[in-house]
Image 1 (cartoon, rainbow, N blue to C red):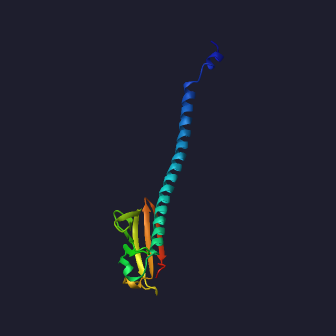
Image 2: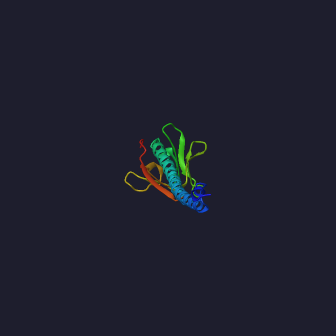
Image 3: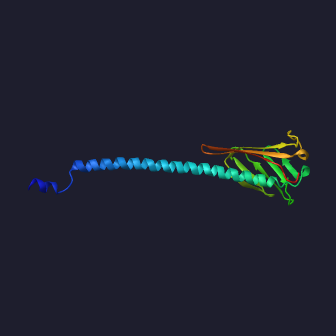
Length: 168
């Protein structure tokens, strides 16, 4: 058997081990890059979910509070975490925050609460007179401020809006 015949038979053990080590290193680097992409995608999904849910809840509250029929008797309940009123259709509706630990913002549909948003860690209604002073009774309400803080994981979003019901 000549020297060239021995070389044509295959790879040596050293060559195979070096190949396996190099493939392992490259695979490890590729896995780290892929995992970083998956982690970034998951974080962005969580952040997007918080924003979408909180913004949708805020937009709905603003739109519906604009439909309060009139000042006074049409505002049934007026607290920092609860607002119930009669809308232009004569239906009693409203919003309330259940607080911690459930952290849900609910919409009163006249018979029960429907969950409007979850993960709301802080929420408040503030009521203002036309001259900018805080109000103590329903007959002087001119503006309603809505403040909410939504949180999911490490993502936090704070929203604030001032509503003037169009029928006042």
